[in-house]
Image 1 (cartoon, rainbow, N blue to C red):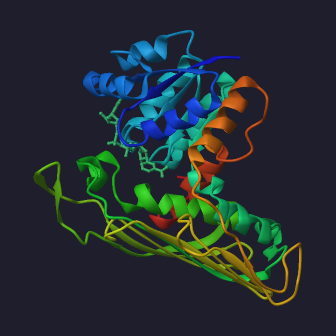
Image 2: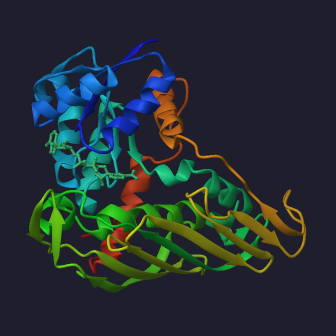
Length: 339
Ligand SMILES: NC(=O)c1ccc[n+]([C@@H]2O[C@H](COP(=O)([O-])OP(=O)(O)OC[C@H]3O[C@@H](n4cnc5c(N)ncnc54)[C@H](O)[C@@H]3O)[C@@H](O)[C@H]2O)c1
């Protein structure tokens, strides 16, 4: 069944979503942007169709589902309009900037009977699927199938930032928390279950001025964060996430009483599980996981399309997952989750 599909926002993420849609084959893609010229250029480059107004794309009754690839501050209103139009949606992370906003979108999507997914792409990465195998069960009771009783983990995600002004302004929901940290918190909640306590140990604006698009801007959103958290099962976790690392850098290390995982979304870094004792299909000693670069967006978009067609039920990157993530962010920011 051919799905007519809209992509809203024609910047950095949109071509990645479209590459995943085009790999499916049975999709007709329409793009729109607040700046119609951007939509026209992208449509021409990727051989899809452009719609001059975002509202017209949302109002088109033949478009069944949309990707939202716009900056975070626009997500709440756009998703609300998309749900009102009865369309399913895949929104880039973060779903929205507040817990109350995330809860209201989850309720609205449920009432409208549409599929809502959030683009936490790391869950589809070979390294983290491998980690999930070694950690199976740890989200329930703290004991991973291969690694045993999990004690501690460290997650790191850094990049240079300076992509666009909105990324470095609080008013546009920019900053390292929304841009980077949320990805790592999502992995923590997925692999280890709910967080009991957490603290934003550091949240700093290290580069107060940035050169973006040929001009200098004053940055007021945090670009370096350090978080410490403890899960309900007692795993001690450190996350360092920033927009102040010269090159993209991502990895995680996870330790249990039967050994360790080290891995990265970056194929050039090693990914392995080391077990003291063979367990759950992992040999004693080092179990390397070698993988070729993959287009993770093919997996992400393929899953979403299957759910839109009714062939599968969404069981990952759900709106409920994003509500739990926002509960953790609110804890970090020092606000009670119920407020
Ligand atoms: N999954 C990932 O790894 C990943 C990586 C980068 C960015 N992101 C997320 O993707 C989203 C988009 O980021 P980006 O880097 O592509 O941004 P971008 O600045 O490159 O592109 C955003 C586009 O949206 C358009 N836009 C802005 N407001 C709009 C509105 N109200 N309606 C329609 N169009 C609008 C802009 O004109 C621009 O073309 C953000 O939420 C970001 O956090 C995710």
